[in-house]
Image (cartoon, rainbow, N blue to C red; front, side):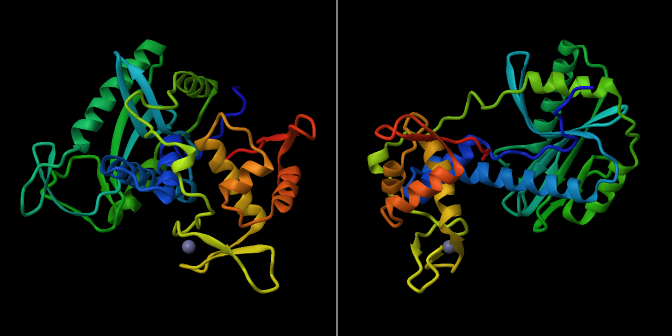
Length: 317
Ligand SMILES: [Zn+2]
């Protein structure tokens, strides 16, 4: 049996989304990047919701791959979630749209204006299914593929949908789960091998994704709040182990905040060394360099001599 493959795997926040999120709280992004950030962010929220739903409510334990990106027929494709059952691979597309829409001939239009949606989930899923079939043939995988489209937002309405489509809404998630729970799920070596093959051809980043350009000097320094992105400050009273957000009152220990800033700094500036001086500057000198050094020593791996000491991250983000 292939080791190290979890039955349900957590979707990691994609690097691009994390970078955009950090940049967004530290500089004003051009409109196109802001739109890209919002789109990515909504997509991730949808994926995260479905992951939690499956983790909490699925009685059977299929193999799961989230945010599966691959190439087939010289075409790139991304699938929100793949569930591998005994006799079937279920492709799940999650949409976090809100508002009222109308269905016409496999396309979605805004209710009222009847303006066509820019990105169309039904053709998108049909294309994904074809490309996944191509990939399976290429890899010698023989298993049926079926699809489900989940509009997970409880403020979403789609009118005039034919009843035979594999579409689910927030109000019909019970039926969605029931249909999955009814599937046979007696997995063997064969299924683990399929999952291993799929993981081996997985693309980490999209060729279409472009990370915006940014420079260290033009980015605002400080510690943004994890909830609302406003700047955190030191507490003035005797509790000196915490930072507080002036906007939402979120408290965070200095250790947690510094480690969060180290991960952020490391993601945004992969070529720069992590030193206490660098993190002191990155966090806008709110915390003393001595305290930062102690946190780095405690949680990271020091490398080099005292004069040229820097640190390496061994924990996962
Ligand atoms: Zn806050």
